[in-house]
Image (cartoon, rainbow, N blue to C red):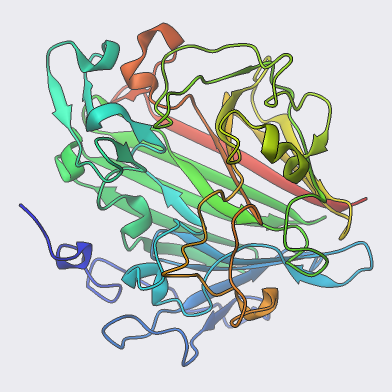
Length: 394
């Protein structure tokens, strides 16, 4: 069935299935923000939830649609707060797609990144050549990106709990939605801790065997677009000696080649922006790196700006990380205005001006058994995704 819009099948944010907690009376730091700019396409308000770390070193806002982070403020090397997370000032744009759909700040699921031909089998087989096939709608050529037409980023999540320093969202994804088997129940907890630390926990259970790969799709500019409009001053360090090989459509081939002597080798830190011309496509980075010796909540990657002095250290229990240098975020026919906190709205998010950082498993391993990764979960195997983002200054 063809739909005029995904909103034709989505419940509204104020439907009975969605609850919004009232801020505790004792809290000075939990705020439900409702402004004239925060309107849904039907004119109803979207409420933003603001939390802060106990020592006020980090401040963030979230909305229930997609369990989305809409802003994130930390201090630069001069002690001044900057909002370093990309997004929309008008929260209706997260739902309407009026300025495009870059997946700003959302939880991605049921299966993040790409699925070849939108097809898989359970148990898995090479390029879905086996029996018991499932089909997910195509939304990127002949393939599926980020869970199909109505991924987790497009769903209104329940707000289960709010404290001064955390917010808990939950989502029930019924069996058959977007073609996936089994009902999946997911809980996401965002917690701001002292010393500008953001802890993210995603846990899910499934009623039947199904692929699961979640991630947070957060776009960062560690300068908040103040000093520069590119990534030349942004550096990355990754303890990863292999990457996921992809074809011209960015679909994994099943190989995990060495990054040695290639532009994908970031084992020694180097500038992201200055490395873009030598990237495999010459268009920028949109690749998945396989961590060396992954472990529970291991220090896995570092990013920093030499200009603002803001540094991000990523700790995660995932085996890989996808990094995207915003190669195609700018559409001249539909440019995305920057947030006011980042110099907008008369300026726009340009290509190669931001980084999407997505801890995860290997892309499309459900079609590549040779990768040796089990991404099928069910009643006896719950899903657990953990990441901690630690911000500091150089």
